[in-house]
Length: 152
Image 1: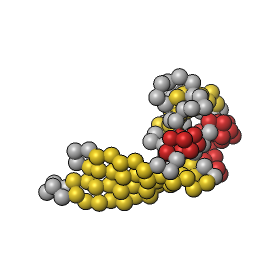
Image 2: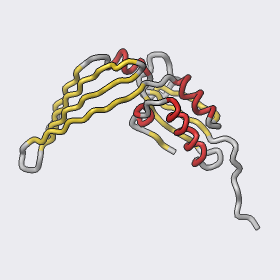
Image 3: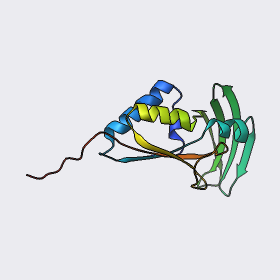
Image 4: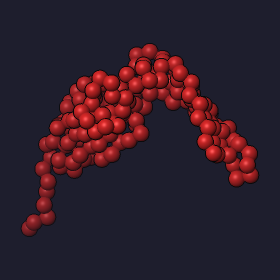
């Protein structure tokens, strides 16, 4: 099972994160593997903080304002100008809200849900995750189910 693009960071309540891991463990095949990425609190507090980011590409321009909202909650306000087929630009506005999770917190949730062999890697180097890792890759295995065979 793959969960990418910081999806878990969009789940803001601890009890809902716990439920996600319970469902993951339920739906994984016996000894199946979960692979997911996430941003820890350090990414939001040190990398983004209250910065505004602007990026201009050939057919799109993006302005990204960041705001710390407390309790490891972070808000992103995106304004995107996308070029249409006729050369005009259309504006899109989005607001994203995410929570930073530590590996320790996610490990606790995953273990409580029955997942085992939980590991964390730096998302950019593949080395074990450290205090300065801004993107972390987590793997965990289903534990407890037995594979059934079709033998008769």
